[in-house]
Amino acid sequence: MTNTKRNIGEGTKLWHEEYSNIGACTIGKNCIIHSHVWIADRVIIGNNVRVEAFAFIPEGVTIEDNVFIGPRVTFTNDKHPPSKNWQKTLVKVGASLGACVTVLPGVTIGREAVIGAGSLVTKDIPDKVVAYGVPAKVRREP
Picture 1 (cartoon, rainbow, N blue to C red):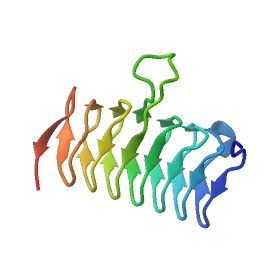
Picture 2 (picture 1 turned 60 degrees about the horizontal axis):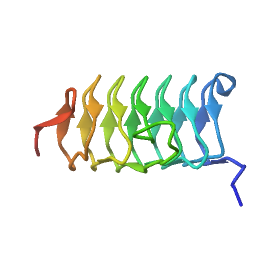
Picture 3 (picture 1 turned 60 degrees about the vertical axis):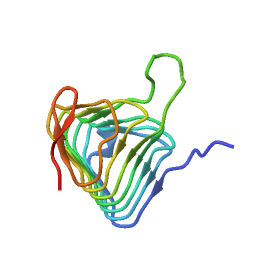
Picture 4 (picture 1 turned 30 degrees about the horizontal axis):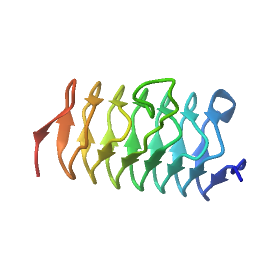
């Protein structure tokens, strides 16, 4: 059975929801979701997450607690569209993605990792590093 209901946690603010497309997803407590975002069905967003305007989050993406998703961040879930061979993507606790980051499918972004603006994330990013570029590479380690 498909979940057709959104689960929105207490204290979460959806800014100008009428300008967004927010599906049957799960969004945790005390999040801020700005306007003009696309959040697909079955997306899971943890607590204290901030999603800036014009972000695109398709099915298969999980975002853990205390994550920042900058404006115009785009996640993808299909390496060879339109195959519908969707892959899962994970953003771990405390990560921060700058403006206009693109994340390819099947990637894990580590705990407290920082991804610089305009980067293209093509492979897993370790915990607590700073990565940026096209493709994103680790530029600073803890």
